[in-house]
Image (cartoon, rainbow, N blue to C red; front, top):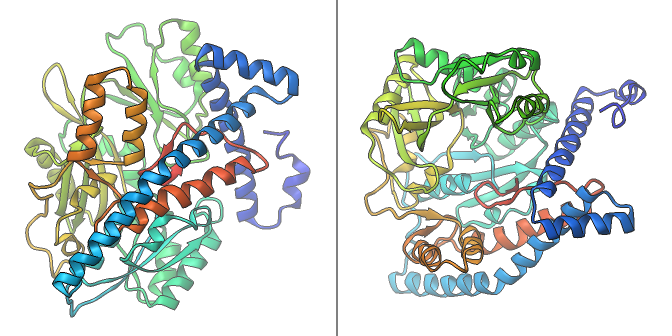
Length: 503
């Protein structure tokens, strides 16, 4: 990192946010370079040879060429998709106009004498759009915010969004982030702030918003300390006699190198104990590897320290499940459980019981995203992760009329789950890509077509069609061009339609 950020540079930095931002950027550059190189080495052999040949001719590093080609390829795919998505949107607009003309009223909202002005963050994510639509349907007024890079998100043009604002990065510019949110809350007279993603919620932000009579629907600081660190979450669950895998907290590479993998009959998953720390985020790896040399090489690639600990967790083979919970004072008000690969509610009383005991014991208020795995050997369900934010599986509530009630104690009664008529959730670009990849398999092609025609596209809505077109073809177009012409073109594995990012 010294070649990117030297001592002389540090002395020139006067503001702490500026220093944090520069350190963050330097770490990200190193991480993206490594990921791009690994991706190139694992790519199709003729493609890899071509890239390296061009690199020798142009003297441009092969990993940078790989990034350019991937970005241009995604731009071409979006261009090919545009006519189809435009046709779908125009047809939806025409259909929506006819229905509203026939019924002579808008079906979206209901009269609500207790209307709240609600601020929702993470505006480029589908889960934020879903919450906007749910609150708007209940008669509330929605202000949507996101980071500056996402200023062209298609969700800002949703019928459910009154206004859209951008804010600085909560990680790189925390002071400016707090000041910007406080100004938005004051200007828009916000009653409640609902963070959808991993926002930096701390006492400083709470105090700044409380000055303007705005509350935050989020875990309190004590509970947040338990949940954000996966090791403390696991140990707290274990103290309640809840089922969790065997886990160890690792604070150095040497500690992991000294771990005795020889006298065990199972593997381990090694992952960041605080997975949302973007500066030090690394891939999850399985240990031990097939040889001692590969194990050592894999461990040495990890950025482990006391400030960035890792979790070594017993590997369990089985079916994974994702859940979303909205809870108030230890009671679950909103619950959905789904397979991790496909979003459709599944009735799992054992998982619900696990969540109920954990939440009731701690008397939690806020959002929880819990991941489980069912052991293939004994059928037991184990909690493997927990995060203090909205899970994207909340999109399963797209047709439920009472989601907003779960956020107000006076209006919530029994626990709300998705309706039985809810269809499986998908994102159209993902399914079209799978269709193209599996063109030689008739079975897989039919599965893609069944998903498209029988499932529910996550962003599309017959009475709110513009986000569907603009998010895919304005927002992602901007992100790709921004990456293409940036000083440091970065590597990305995929276009994440769900989160609205290049991941």
